Length: 366
Image 1 (cartoon, rainbow, N blue to C red):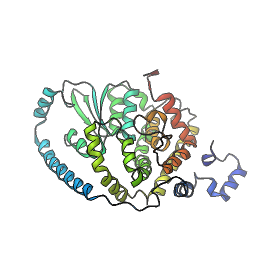
Image 2 (image 1 turned 90 degrees about the vertical axis):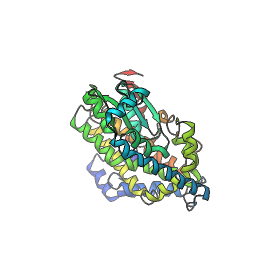
Image 3 (image 1 turned 60 degrees about the horizontal axis):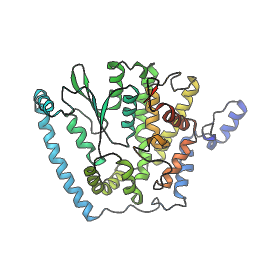
Image 4 (image 1 turned 120 degrees about the vertical axis):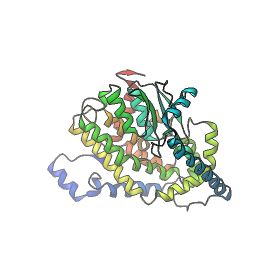
């Protein structure tokens, strides 16, 4: 077990551990994180923009963003009108063009951000359940409009968003727990929730760990020197016209995101949450006897943790949707974070899940 997550097994070691809290980051994760990761990223020998102030967007990008906001607001004005149209009329139109809401469709239509760990969670669950689906990858600039338009006014302002056949009609599932719940309760995939603990941990990981996990990545992805090359990581598989749109909007969006979410200021806090979550998974693996989080079989808890943790571990299997650790354009500070979490028990567990279980359906390789 790596030293950063090594458990104390004897009274003598426990006494020594209490005297040296920096050697037991499970008890003081924030101290370990800030002193190990933040200092490393600030003193890297590679050229980074960590020590440089944010560059202001050009006049061109400012005007483009203003025009884009006007277009978005105009489209958003149409959404309340869409909500007032009877569903029977909407469904009739959908039937004619075979849209995602068409009653004659039986498959699941999934709208995703290619790199999103929440979207990866849904992809994994659908594929592991053998559920046929059609994925539409969307660039970050169209996230809000896509969720609102295809959600028929019921969706959140996020992705993934799934549209599937349920109880004889097409239904919008605007969040990953709803998709997994549909698979478990309406598609006979009871293996997702073998115990109440599996459901509780799935929700816990999503509510408490999901955002901090990718906010750590965003801290590096939005830095000016790496923003545009990072955008290429995040748009793998999206249509070309969306790539063109996103490249115009991203410099402004990245700057606003960094300031609004306080990615730099909250890095230590987010790393602390990640440390605590990785420690929780290690403890569950030990307490429940493994080889999975809730015992002898894979469950929604494993899929949820592995998916939400993948930005901090970068499994090779996810390079098609995001980026790999060996990519020459990866921010060196981000690479240091990944190496640290890969060295933990929980990090190795994520890599093992992706290597041996990511492409498995009911015991058979896809």
